[in-house]
Length: 285
Length: 348
Image (cartoon, rainbow over the protein chains, first blue to last red):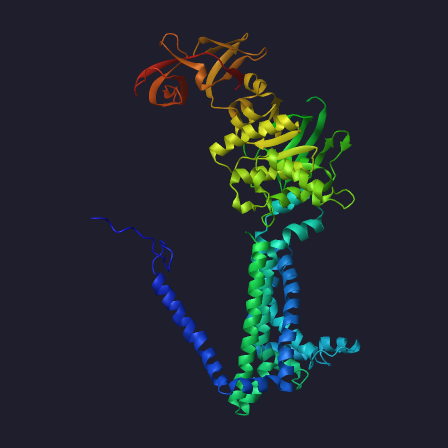
């Protein structure tokens, strides 16, 4: 009697010494569904009540379109700024030792913890034309508060910790010998920095950018105090949603939310793809 | 090939925080030689190497390359090749880019043409026997391969001197042996002045033209492997170069006696009175009690590579290891006598 041939079965999961794959996967999916997917699905379902033409109508409404432009445009700009400054902050905090370094390091996290309304009021009073900084800016002819500049300032403020905390661990891990090796091979400091030290950090900088961007798009509390909320000028999309809700226009609110969701998803996916590419290109292959 | 002085280290002193690492150390490196800096950890050998490279700077003293005082010359302008214990390869660059790095980092006016760089990278890959690996990344290579890439990268800039800091320290025994032989071959072929740091005396004795033995930030002795083994200048050098047995002895008129019995060891003129006699495990022989210098009982023995090593508890209390040819084995507990056949004496 012939033994049945031992056929390699395609397996859904890899053999592992750690038990509980089924349990943990189930748990993860359940939590993700209840907390994230279900509310989002409800949102999309509610919005789809308007039909595609209905959503399109909302999206092309000049006021909505302008708010979306402000939200995403300013977020991207703010995330870019936060990435650059965040990188510098992380660099200074890890590479140099100076008195008060630990205190500065702790201060970086404050935007995480501060109630956003508090941050908004603080920024507004600081940057208002009669505020400490606003008065100086006013002399230069720059209006910060109650314009898109104010939105930008608030978004940089709340995005900065993300940018700092994502690159910091990688800067800590930079091997001094790598820099010394570069120097012994005749490379100057700038060459060493741009060719040896920075490239492996690019994926982390992108992560920080994505997080700061996502945070900026979703931010509401701090911005409404400093933005001035002028329709067509400094009105952000989340505020428009709140306005629609207060007018009992649930369908319209859901439509804007769905559009934001779509744009955010596409943007984050794109950043993720760039990141995967750069990790292959610059990261530790 | 060897002869003229390539690098002169003059009266070098270096203190880290409050701990002195180098004391007034002077050393000449000859052009084309393979010099080993041998010493236990904390002897200052790596610091010396880093000062020669320009990665650290001395508190006092000078480093002279040929006729040029290089003491304050920044590392980029010293034209040294440095190989680190943990390779320090650029992980985000391919093997070819790693090797070409030093050439690409040059100013445009001094940089070789692209085709020339490519040719040189190819030559170096042939030299290190990794011709097919140009497009691989460091993480795809084994430790031994990575260290060879690091060496090729250092050689690419045609350095005045090649400096290797414990180059085989992170590799396993077999790879280390192969790489040692291979480094010797490369050196014979290129005639590159090379200094390498090691704490492994076998490595230093096998590989180098000359060995500099360092201890506590001072140069104890410098000489060929034969010189330092046959005529060590101090007990420190002797002890660091291999297992030793230390015996109390009396010197008088050039003769050395242990336990009142004459030994074949000759004391240098002027050394009189109580001294320490040092012998290697193979410089002892089992003997009748009447002819023996040392007495004791066998504690244990084992055989390895055709030799037998026997631990003997001396009556005075210390345990010594004796190496003998692999003949009849001695049972533990047997009382034995040992004769000293050769050795060195230093003031106790």
